[in-house]
Length: 108
Image (tube, rainbow, N blue to C red; front, side, top):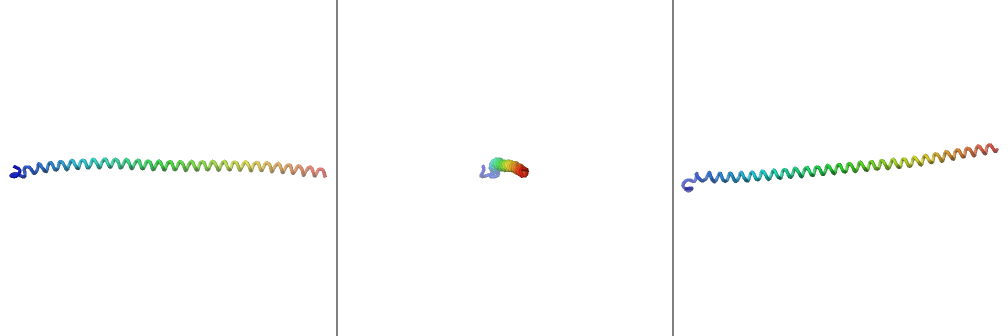
């Protein structure tokens, strides 16, 4: 029958081919969408990791600066205490020297 009437069977074969093409196309679209979702997820994860790393580096830098600032303040406080002690010692020595000078001038 197909030999006598090829147009009868041809549309059926074409329909099956179209169905198969549509199935393959649908599978391709689904596969591409899955891959797209995976790529978006990977991109977001990488972006979050980079942001996290940047935040961590920023926090570490801030902590280091804070630590350095605290250390400098402590060193300056230590130097200030040393200077104040030196000033007090110098004042005591000047008073003592003035007292000695006064006493020796009284003796003369």
